[in-house]
Length: 470
Image (cartoon, rainbow, N blue to C red):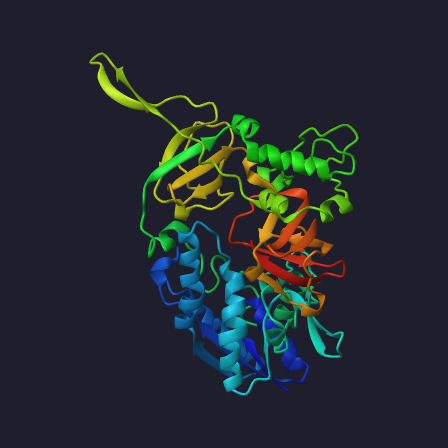
């Protein structure tokens, strides 16, 4: 069996290659170049050249053949262009997931097969297993990595059975410290190399600067949304009332996401008061009530809040001893124009840095962007109401089942554990399959769920079963 290892120059893929070699397989390494433009990176140099140099040293140390393949044009077309298009539409893509689906286990796999490879191995912290389907066919499973701090199964959530049939993950049963130790004992040149950061194969970039390569700046208002808006907004009231009606004992539902202490610079957890006798961390929904929700209610429940009802009128006034005529916005109890930005496409839900707005006791966070009016809406504080959502919808064309034999049928409701971003602890949720899409109703509201991201769901055996872009 001939195995091609995608050798990146990092310690993880290096140890993957070493272990396969030690196990007696016919192994060769291939380094892929996916990016040329050094001007896009913060370092301003060609990081890939150093990575290739280290990868070649590793291959020589292990004693395996080394090859190079340039996939930069394919990467630009399938990953970078898609990334620009998503940001231009006001969505937040995940280039790492796209890179695995379109490059590592597609274009790179094909290049490896042309060199005689039967399988492609990578340094992902996840595990692959086999099972037998209902018709006796061989099926492949993606299991979470053994190291809970490094589990990277989420990044593989869009892989197909065909891709998994040719994929190997040799270090998925190890922890990161164990991988480092193996590399040190083998005296691999990558043993102390730091983990890569930033966009897959591009590197660490200043995102607005990177996006400005294709997306033109367009100044617009930054609007702060006050709590009073939610008290008067019928859509927010509908969500609150609907969630409350789904509780086993009807009442006031938990509407604000819980956030970790590290999200607040070491401060305590959000201690928002809840109804007497209620669980302080989650909603206790009645499964029968949830399963009976009609499609139109689910559509409204999953719809992001809109702020286009916030309008600001101007008035003229005279200022100073010379009575210079000036213009200002009239006071609005629901919000205020607090600044300007250089393009709504450069901002994403949950973003804190780069707003350039001061004068607040707590940080401002992006709640949403309105591309039609080029407006960025923000709210003060980690626990701002506009940052939380309890229900997400995945359109039918975006639903992907890694295990087709376990796909849900319209009308079904199942319990899964879900994450909507890398390293997020798995969240308990009910998934409801309908003709209009797949709905994810979380027991705990989710913070900063950015449209364009992927949700991946797991069963209780740490198997990732499917995913979808919401």
